[in-house]
Length: 87
Image (cartoon, rainbow, N blue to C red; front, side, top):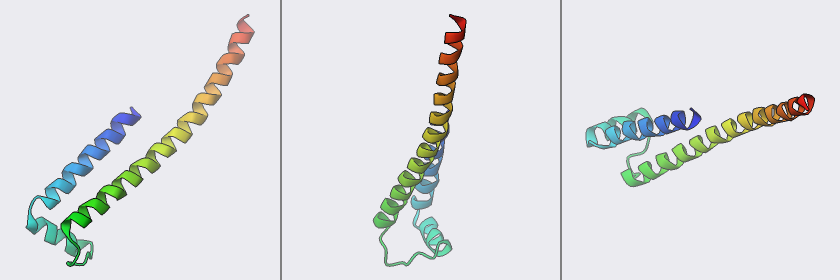
């Protein structure tokens, strides 16, 4: 479930940015909306966006790992206690 959500987020993000950078008209509008200087190349802009997406995805994965790690440890502890009670 978690991997599906993150995968869907990544795929949709790349599709959106591909549609933005596929035509120069969209790129100009994107630069104007985000107040990005025109002297930056498209390659630098694309690489910086990809790095941002990777960092953001890593943070989300870390949060999921922490939350589910804590929950799974508690469940495993409770399961061991229940096994001992059944003996």
